[in-house]
Image (cartoon, rainbow, N blue to C red; front, side, top):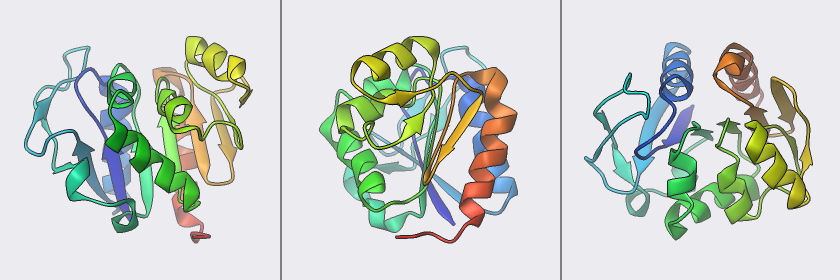
Length: 174
């Protein structure tokens, strides 16, 4: 499967690297999509430096991808300030394609308006934001609701990867 990983500066290093590597090891093609092709983006902890954005949002369409990965950190909040990433994320929900978001990743759901129809989890402060907006939020290491996998924090990465890979094994309903 071809997976879009949306990323900009300030992503959480391990929430990008570990799922990215696991998806590639499982023989999925992962394309880093960001604001500007060729841009070098850095994780906020300094472990991941100079990750190259392979495609800009204006160079791709959600139809080119089978699934979506949204690492946490500051990246989701920075991306949701731009319409193209918001529309990109919304299109995956509209098409019922697999979406995996960890930690601050569900912040993009708030701006895209995709938080109402799924049960999910997120980083504790994002849980509050989602709940106040009317989302069905629980505090668990991983939540799978149809096409959506969410987790709270770096400690949840093993469960997040396990459930994401499982979801990608299920034939798409799109």
